[in-house]
Length: 293
Image 1: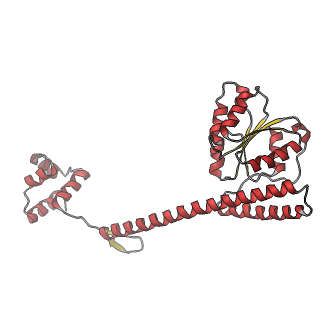
Image 2: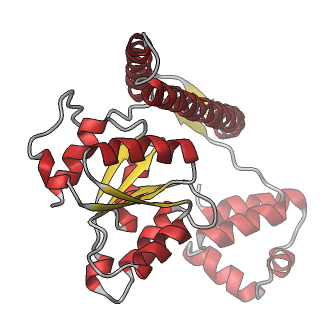
Image 3: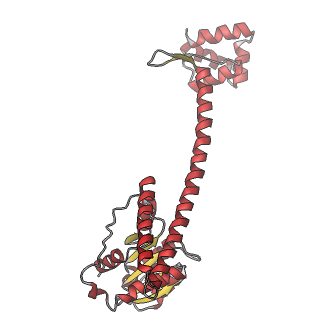
């Protein structure tokens, strides 16, 4: 049945003249007549016409398995499914946020425990055994987390110190981290291998330290991401904008407990040259520094 025939039948059954229909649609009657005669009504005009007449068009949907369902029933079913999916999606978002926060807190706590064990290792008997146990727990935990979140890293984790360690002696490194314990741990690792360490407690301090020193003074910057005043991303971008190209091109390595692929991409976009997840493997860190010499 053509559109014009359908509308004529409906208008007749409802007792609505087509001139009145055109008026309700905001059209000139002659324009509506022509469109009906030529079957040239747009979809929007047809929908408006049906709305004015209060007509609901239903049709049968046929599926490959032979089942059929009316368009109205299908519409209602889809709305129910969408509502259910929205609720499930919101619950999933909440769960992911909670678990990621819990994992981050766990990483931070273990990193602190490892740091205390490392600093106390020279003074307490039997601390090495405790250190090894924490290392094993952390390794297993990180592996499980990475697998569960599909955030496995391609980083190599060497057990032995890299060759050419003498190249690092006397080199200047700026360590930017708002956590005092983290700075203490990293400073001990670095100074033990002959590096000269300057410290910054936030991203702004790191930027000012680079600007205050002569170009080329710093050979590397180890940049934490989450810091007050100015985070590691913003600090890095500001360093890259410095007019002096020697200062602007200092190798910057991100150090962070957040080691997802998205975090790595964001670090690279900010201008960071490398990315290491906390707790940092000392041999891996030293090897990365040597690469930039």
